[in-house]
Every structure is written in structure tokens, then in C-alpha cells.
Length: 282
Image 1: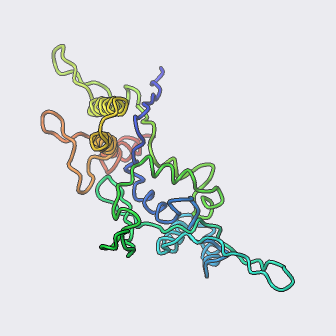
Image 2: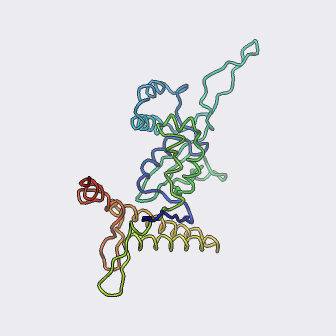
């Protein structure tokens, strides 16, 4: 018998995948938020080529080393102008080929990421008080993060220890929600004719509702703070659907007040799907 097939749901806006949000933060700290290039490279960064050589067989260690090196760099280095000698020949120097822009610090709070810019001590036109080149702190939406990750060149994806074919950075942000078939979330018959639905079914209904509301508000041209609020609601429901035990985030509850049993809770631990149901079978 056919066990059913996965469906999918197109989300109104991209959202962070709760399993990858820390990895996304590290990638964003490693690349330029303007041009997408890695902030360090083997030609211009001392000792970087050696680190890449030593971690060539271990992708996880390589990613960690690249992040440790790049996250400390505050500017995406631009090319230096060629110095011409008397003969008129331009002296070729190893260059990074970046855009020369300042880089923000990336901060995580709950299910949100923020960019934090340093203040610049420029005077205002009227000469009163310091002027900031950028807002000091700004929410980095999943759509903006997705645009940055899509700009990363294939060569830099390889340098980071990811794979341009099997593990692209932009795939860590969700634009589509997979919907499991009914055998994964069977309904529970409650004695009589009433049939209760599985927690995941209720959660998927909330995700659909949040996505439709967000889409409606966007189309109606609602103020940005209202659209932002509903984007946060969609982010919350997609995160608690997958993991309902996130530190610092309130648990999603059923109407009865019982916490929703997320996908992670079904898989992990001794009583979970893997150790409890699969490993003892021959």
C-alpha cells in the first residue's frame, strides 16, 4: 500500500530554519554582507592557506577555522590601485577583490538576527553632535539573509567546507515548508464519532493561517511594523513545529494547555522514533 507522499506549502516570506540558525549566523559573520565574498582569502591573509591545507579532509573543522578567522575582520578589503614604475609597468599585487565596505557584527536574540553597526564620529551638516553612517542596530530578516547567502561565490562555498552541489548556504533558509503525509500524523479517534487531529496537523494549520495573513497584509500595503509582527508569528510557528524546546522561547501549547509534541521530540531520545521504534527491529 502507498504510505502517502510529502506535500509542500509555499511560505509568504522566507523564515530561518531553527536547526540551522546558528550556522547561518556564522556564515553571515564570515562573508561580506554587501558583495557576498569571504572576508579572508588564501592569497592576502597570513596563515590562512596553511589552515585550509590542514583542514582539507575535515569539513566541520574547516568551517570552524574559516569562521574564527573571518569573523574578526571588520572590512571587506578592496583592491589596491596598481603602482606604476618608471617603465610604466603596473606592479601586480595579490588582491582580495572585495568591495571595501565596513562589516556589521551579527547578533542573535531568540529567533531573530540583528546587524550591529559601529558609530562613525562624523559631524552633522549643522555641526552638532555625532552622525551615524548606518543605524546602530537593525533586524536582519530571513529574506535579506537569503539574498546575502545567494551572493556567495561557488569558490568561497568550497573554501568554507560546504558543498556547492549538496549543501548550499541559501538552502538553510526556508522558503517552502514540507508537509508530511497522514501516516506520519494520524488522527486519533476519541471514543465516539469525534476524531482528534495530531499535534503536527494543528501546527501545520497554524503555519498556513499565519502565512495567509502575512500575504494578505503585504498585498494590502499594511505598515511595516504590522507585517514584521506577522513575520515573527510565522517564524515562531515554523520553529516550534520542528522543535518545541528552544531555550528562551515560550512553548507552543494545545488548547488543553499541553505542550505540542514537535518533530524533534518524536525523533530524539530512548523513547523516540529511532531508538524506540527502529533500532530494535530486524
